[in-house]
Length: 257
Length: 215
Image (cartoon, rainbow over all chains, first blue to last red):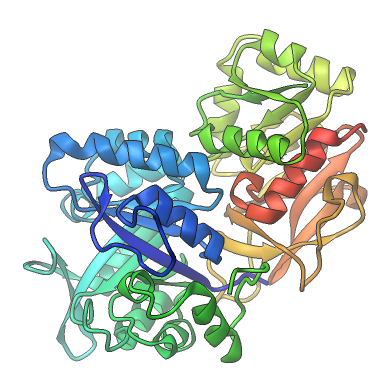
């Protein structure tokens, strides 16, 4: 049967990992490729790079990172951050990304999702949704790191991008991101139950139990986390072990403990 | 040994090429990997790999856009018996027809249609995306690879599957509500719905087996 996925996410700025990975002895914890290799060996199911490079001119460095990662890592790689056009997507795919995640550009130009899915296939088009709770059972899409409201209802938007051809949704609760208090399960479940495509839950993981809840109670197909893995709080293996103990199906192909 | 990975504009072939290089190196197989659309390179290759991502019709158009490529494939693979591996949509192209959005002819090597996945359980998401195990019959390409529910995992991402008319052409399935076609093979031709180049242990093992394969 299909397994629930565990996905570490690395923030990359100007070609360097922002929060260093220190769960193994890396020669250079700031090197995204070395971090990627470590996660590959640790049994991560996929890897996500989020490019937070501020200037558009320096984005070429990300392509180089993707190229070097794809050459060394035989696991699926999603790249997001600043993806604005079909050309941006093409450049990332040609560099070796398996999926690209679109956020702000999709909010402003919904049709970009349709054009991208038609040109490259739904399987490589992830739509990232940053949502904040604005009322009982209502969540709104925000951009610019949660600072700018868009007036868009998160559930309706998720349905819309699904019908336009998105292949996956990367859902982040801006209320929970960085809090280590667990996913917004109500939000995750509302979106996951509303769409036919897989949903990756993100934002708020602080314990192993949180990952279990994201799948079991949030109905997500995958859980994404950053700091708890990077800072060595938990290993990928521990996360999967906890999920397995909770009765969830995970991939354990002789992972490093 | 010369391996041709056919580049017909269907996505990035960088990681596929690297995975073949790695599998060859790890198994002390001497192989040069060429990523090329040149029919002459394909004709001279000892192993032919047809990748593919995106929509069936787009991939078919891409193949047809390279003058002489389909003819060379038919001549070397079907008439010449050269070992061939189709990956993802490259595997689906081996079918008689693709029924994704529009009806498009495939290469017609495996009798069957490429049809949308329709799980009985509405909770099952489409695309079938992620890691799943294989239920397989013994085959040289799976030598040394543990299959079954407790076996190794392969990475899938697809919304359509090859529904083969003849059960003997299907050598592996994967369970997603029902049994989806994961691998087809007959004589010197084989195809995987999953991505061996993204499937770590299982993938590198299968690629090494393909490089050693003498059907």
